[in-house]
Image (cartoon, rainbow, N blue to C red; front, side):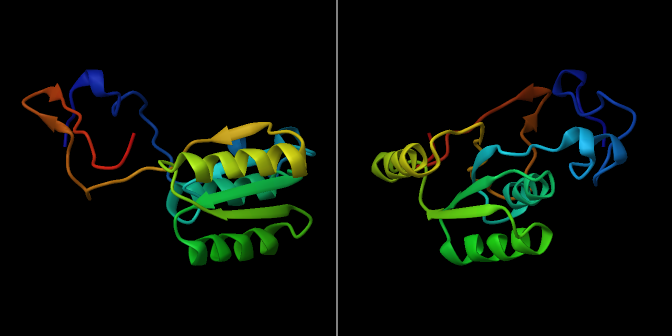
Length: 146
């Protein structure tokens, strides 16, 4: 399927679907020793994958945030298989709940003392629907997502 040029889908002739040498986090020139990373939406999908690659890059702390605690447990287990020296902190939360977000921010400040990387990956999807109609890009407001 051909997409309109302004969408950017056809921006590059090579589309990667996996890690390739230039972005392999386990390579010495891409390691992140001592860093603290917080990832929202880290229970599955892209967020989990981001967490696993940060674990491979030897960060000190990974703060996992997602709505489902059992998914956070699964991500933690996968991280420990990759690098059991990473400290994993888990917070079941909904990013639209400001008091839950404030609790995590306070914890990070008090217990870790810094945050080097924030990956705002939390989101929602209504399935595999195209966002394009008649050549125009359209966004729809999703209930409960800000």
